[in-house]
Amino acid sequence: MKPKVLLVVGPTATGKSELGIELAKCFGGEIINADSMQVYRLMDIGTAKPPPQVLKEIPHHMIDLLWPDEIFSAGLFRKMGRKAIENIIKKGKLPIVVGGTGLYIKALTEGLIEGLEGQKELRERLLQKASSLGKYALWEELKRMDPESASRVHPHDLYRVIRALEIYHLTGLPPSKLRKSHSFKDQPYELLKIGLKKSKEELLKRIKERVKEMIKRGLVEEVRELLQRGYGPELPSMKAIGYKEVILYLKGEIGLEEAIGLIVKNTWQLARRQMIWFKRDKEIKWFEYPEEKEKIFTLIEEFLKGEKFHGGEAKKGY
Image 1 (cartoon, rainbow, N blue to C red):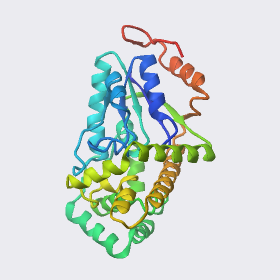
Image 2 (image 1 turned 90 degrees about the horizontal axis):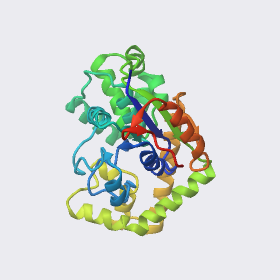
Image 3 (image 1 turned 90 degrees about the vertical axis):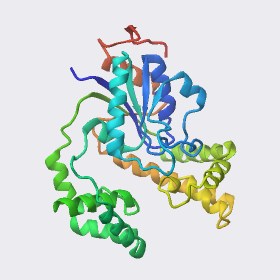
Image 4 (image 1 turned 180 degrees about the vertical axis):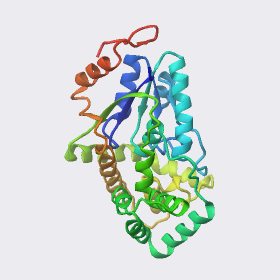
């Protein structure tokens, strides 16, 4: 039988972390972080990491792995994440994957197209082209070469646009065709996919509240310290939402209120892209949390029926 793994996915600010922690407590689980930014040390407030007391109480994996000037990838996440799942299962606990980075989750649970490592020279050439002609020019090139892949990638998502072009130049095949032939058949786990959703109005409200709380907790000071340590704005990690806007403020190019407004706007756009990504997965069961918490717990209990954690039946008590 395949090991059972629980996924909690969805757009940012829908309560994934809170639900994941509650599930870990109730069902004897450990959390595997699936957020592309929480892997970086020193970047705590802007990435909405769980507070230290929570990390101490509930084991979290795939957090604070790298320094901000190091490079992470879906392939590395897959390798390390699967090792974490193996270790959690050996302890007799439930692996709970929590996050909104869809590509990482797909790599972890379904695999990646192997043997397609990028070439530094090719990537640099594409980056130079984007710098001189603009991101949209690369997306237009992808659209001409592979309309299906272009329809799945936002024109401003330079990383994924360049990756698709890399695959084409390395294989001579459109990524969409290669993807279909691969079919992501590497599926080693039995999955239950829980998706969290909110109405547009509620989600925007929660995003505004989260950004306000980040500023209150010291996001500006966090970014200032990162810059003082030598982590410059050119690094991919420092171009993350929350960091790039505060950098503009610290450079005197915009005011603090404008920076806050940009963080809210960019976070909202990210949430929309995340929902588009996850909506394509018909296996995801969608709920509002905490309003439908009882339904979520009942579904998980059915999924885990016959499984044991902590030496006994999964605990109830919600």
